[in-house]
Image (cartoon, rainbow, N blue to C red; front, side, top):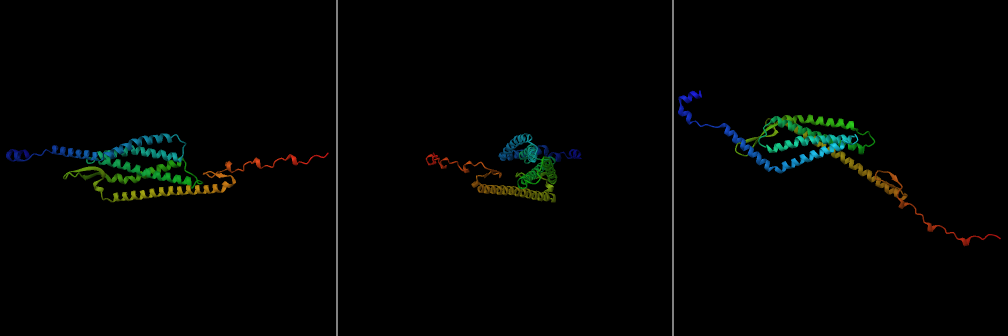
Length: 292
């Protein structure tokens, strides 16, 4: 129809303005790339800091895993190995993702990739927090309840798996609500896209539920860790005070107590010295002479 109209009315078709859509799209993309570059330069110290954390985390977690893997199996060894693996995965996945989000602030237009990255990052954070709680409870039991049965390597492994599974399940809602979020660029009506909460979930009940669960979980974990280590500190302080009191009471009798509570008799300075000059002298002139 347009070709027929142009043939019938050639003057009308020649007066109509021609818009190059491809050129306009290219100009918008170039403008967004320029905004990305400016934003990346403004947060360059943050990017460098994340890069340093990435390198240090790789070296530190690999070394800790290699070193503690040679230790004798125990609950402490199991927890340290699990935390090292989680931190290593966090450095390999989360830190590069954060750097990419800072470098492509206005052009991160991949919702599914964003969901996967945010889900993995959230599960790592949850799992690490639960593992720290498990470590605190294990240390509390060893110090404050030393007479009870302690965790072994198998028990710690099962507890670590439970922490990872629960952290993964709690991260599923966050992976569902994230995606592509439209953000203003500050340049006219031009908008960009970033990896964050999706536009359709900014005020959803699922997001509010996830935030409530996250806040409750954070408060619970911090409280359990703080209470456990506070009780450990009080127990150590009372034990040390008791040992010092016993040491002071046992010192006059020549005994001392080590910080572990053992009694020893190695204080030579408390022993009675041998005073040879106090002995009664042998007086030969006082002896009775023999009878004749």
